[in-house]
Length: 136
Image 1 (cartoon, rainbow, N blue to C red):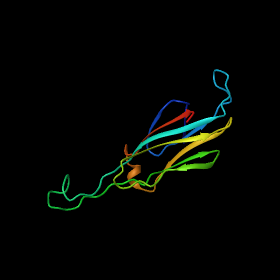
Image 2 (cartoon, one colour):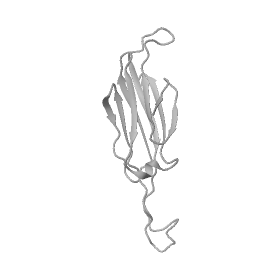
Image 3 (cartoon, rainbow, N blue to C red):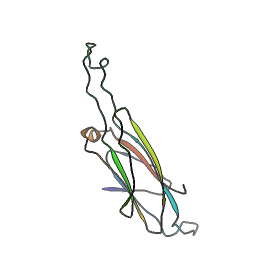
Image 4 (cartoon, rainbow, N blue to C red):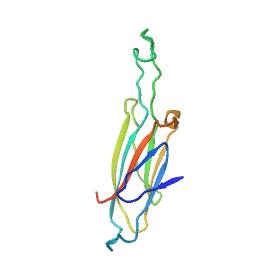
């Protein structure tokens, strides 16, 4: 299921939810809507590096289980990929991006997160906030 984005309104989400936005034919003020838009996203992901000490290690030097994310986000315009996020390192717990797109009236922008890592499917681990704005 896709969530529908409203211009200039942040949309918070938990989990691997996709988003869509269709450029309108006119603004409320009568201006044409085909022009420069931007996709802005902030994402937090599960992240914990294995250590020899700390919670669960019992102080005996045993190594804890690392937690990482396999998140990939694709931004597409009319089904053509315009941006794909880089691979996160195990120490990264967050990522953000802002992508400018030149759009015509009726263009469809989709933001699709995916992951093959089970950590990203755990309850409340992957959190995103996506906004579509006009301009760069």
